[in-house]
Each structure stands twice: as C-alpha cells, then as structure tokens.
Length: 184
Image (tube, rainbow, N blue to C red; front, side):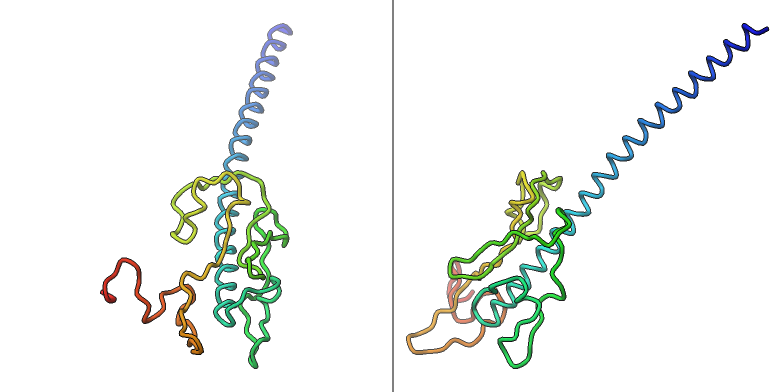
C-alpha cells in the first residue's frame, strides 16, 4: 500500500509543476501584451503632446512673427498688454517620463519644435495624420519631430505693412496659390 501512495504523490507533484509552468507562460504572454499596450498609449500621448507644443509655437509665432526663446515663453507671453498663455503647463515627454524635451532650433533664432529624447523603436509605422506624415516608417522616437513652419509668408510692398495672418500657416488672401488660376 505504501508503494501505491508514493506513486500517486509523484503524479500530483508533476501536475502542480505543469500548472506552475503553464501559469508562468501565461503571465509572460500577458506581460508582453501589457507592455505593447502601454507603449501604444505612450505613442498616442506623444503625438497629442507634440501637437500641443506645435500649436503653442504656432500661436506664439502668429502673435509676433518670431519663435519663442524657451519653452517657458509658451506658458506666459507678456509681449502684449494682456498676457497670453499658449500652454497651461510644460508637458512631460511620455516616452522618457521627464521634461527633457529636445529642441528644434530655428535658423533665425528661437525654438520651432520639439522631439523626444527616447531611442526606442516605435510600434506605430503608418496611418499618421497629414501633419505628422513624416513620422511614418521612422526607426526612433527621437525622429518624431513636432515642428511649426509657417507655410506662407506675407508679401508686402516696400514701405507697406501687412495685417496679421488670419490663420497661422494658412494661405494669405490676395496671393495666388501655385497651380490655381485667378483663385479658382
């Protein structure tokens, strides 16, 4: 009878060992899925925050036709009698979880964009919005740059002054658009 009990205890041990191995494999798979989901969420946040910086720089530029000197200039612009806030706060870089944004400097001075310092490889490779189309097929988050470039500069006759651009980056009334005849 003792020999029979020892044999049954061995099968129970093997059954428990198999269950522990199976649970370990399932937890490993769940951790991979969780990590991918978290990275996709961080990518979405990076695109949102990058666009917020681009829009803030666009507003700052439209207000005075120059780029901000620091990111803190976007928090409170006191160049006019009524201070303007283009950002509520300086967002953290979702990929590095810090405020150490890398800056894209404009040739004429100031900051025209930001990008992440993360060297990780993105999951998202396509289906970007048109403004972020340059982020497609990039191998590093550090190449996802969120830059504001004025598309059209107002042409002014010598000695004349140009009224403010109605929409930052939008076409200027009265200037023909290439490829269109007489505004049609």
